[in-house]
Every structure is written in C-alpha cells, then in structure tokens.
Image (cartoon, rainbow, N blue to C red):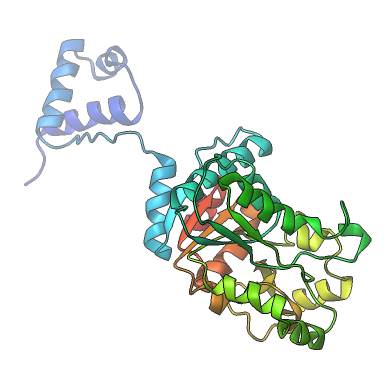
Length: 322
C-alpha cells in the first residue's frame, strides 16, 4: 500500500525533528502549518511506527569489558576503573590496588603461593593488606640473580627476593627464596644446579602451589620490563628473541603470540617455572598494566596460563576489540 499524503508529511516532519534537530517552530514555518500541527504530526509518526524510539541505560564500560573478555578467553576478569585523561601513575595505582584486593581474597591458611618478580608485582605486594594467615608459605617462581651492572640496583640479587619476603611478611608467612640466576649462561649449569637438594626443595614447593601471582614481561613499544631493561639479557639474546618472534615472558619463560614456548632456545637457560607446570596451579592471577603488554598477554592466554586477569581499562579495550 502506498503511503498517504499525510504519512509523507509525518515522515518529513519527523526527519526534520529527530534526524536534523530542527525546532517545531522552524518545521512549522517550513511546512506552512501551525506549531500544534507539527506536534500532532510527530505524535502520529510515532503511533504509525514511522518513528521508533529506544532507550539504552548508560553502559558500565569496565563491566562490559570484563564480560566480553571472559567470554572470549574463559577467564575471570577484573578491569580497574580508570579514565583516559588520568596519568600513567594513577592508572598504575588503580591496577595495583585492584590486584592486591583480588589476591588477598584468594589467600587462605596453610596455602602455598607462588610469586614472580617484577615492577608490577612489587606494586601489588606493597598494597596488600596486613593480616595474619596461619601456615602460609610464599615461594619464588623464577630466579632473580643478575651479575650484570645494569641490574644491580642493590646487590644484584634483591629484586625477586624482596618481593617474596615482603609478600610473606604481610601475612606473617614463610618466604622461600629461589637464589639462582634469572637466566643461566649455560644450559648445563642449570641442569647441574637443578639436581642440588636446595634447588629441588624450592622446585617441589613450586609444584605444591595452589595460587600463583605474576605479571607479563615485554620488550615491545620502547617500554621494556625489568628482565629486558636491567642487564639480564645480552644484545645477542634480545636479537635472538626477536628472530624467534617472542612477544614477552611469564616468570622469565619466553612466549610467542600463539602461546608456544618449547622450541625457544633461550628457555633452556631460564630459571622460571615452565608453562606446563604453571598451568597445573589451580588459580593463576595475571596482572597487566599498559596496552603495550597486550601482545604478550595474548600469548599467555593462548598458552592457558591465566585463570584470573587484572588489567587497566585501555589494555582491556585492546584485548577485547583489538
């Protein structure tokens, strides 16, 4: 059925009012009718279905991102509420505070917790609320000893050990340090040390962990993580990682974007817990701050290393839609 003349006028009035933001007075003058006639035309346009109005409540952006990432990757997601205009420090604080809250909610008596080291982990541990947790043990997941001057802010051994000791102290727990190099010069040296009783004790404790907490390392976008910036790796190592399409690391074990890691040569010299062993820990909290880490985060997710993810809003947006 062809539209009537009246319906055509209703459409014209509705288009002017709703699509072009004309006032009723302006429309009345244009159509040569009264303002009250324009009002009736708009009412009739809605009744005829020419105009359909829908209302949408304001979206909780972080909550929507949490749901989308959870659906895509099958992990529990916590997005820190941050604004684009906030500076990097404010975003860092928001992520660290949220991560500390998530980690604290998972801490239980007689638990073994595995902790990696790095700038992100340091910030998280510094924000944990102090309380007594009987029988808690914190075990270091990757070595931190570094003989290179670039990494020797204290004595070249303190980065990872400081995180683990502070983590344990917050809860009155017992720290278990992993006093081995982050990356060995020779695979044979690592194999020999792995047979030592003191090292085996820490490795066995790592396997008993029911909660692991770690960040994501990356050397992308000119903002390298500590393992890349502080002398743990040589220029030759970095070039080799680039050639092997490595995007970052979890516990100083290197990953590609697809989550593969076994045939990356440098991993044979790394002291961090292997991804296949890490994936056996029931709860694995990964903390990410900065969109430049998203490629490495995707690798960690592809490898199945994450059960609980805490990240900033910009990283969440890129992970969900990028």
